Length: 164
Image 1 (cartoon, rainbow, N blue to C red):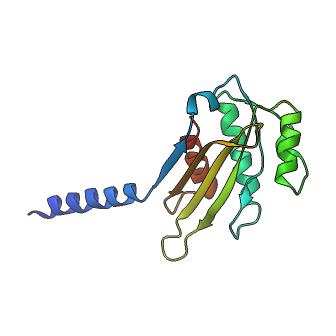
Image 2 (spheres, rainbow, N blue to C red; image 1 turned 60 degrees about the horizontal axis):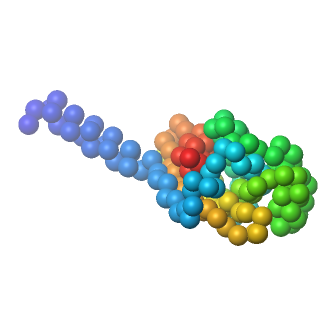
Image 3 (tube, helix red, strand yellow; image 1 turned 90 degrees about the vertical axis):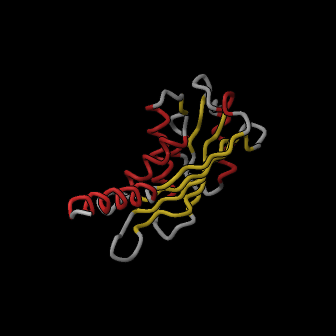
């Protein structure tokens, strides 16, 4: 085998390895067509932050808010900014303001991995809740990026893939 062929083989294998490490999205839904309908009104609430990164829950919700608007969903504008310590009271206020569904979730990982590579890693779970306080759709996803990627970029890509 020539050096050129060996180099190309190593390059292709390395590329495939890094591509496979780029992350994946797994979703579970009960009735996606009725839940993700652009005629519905949604309220995006801050996510619960299970990470050591301050404000990761608010960062994720802020990105989701912008992504949903860019995809044409109707969003109740003032809900994300409601100051409340209790998620349930925020949900009640959202429905009182006219939301059909509340979108919230958890941030399970939001960090740069330690070590030489320092890759960004994000893991998020989303929940769509109806007025009866029942979860009607849930999804979870995780994604890692390359050294030169930011957490914001990786989170945006992940959320774009999670929302139809």
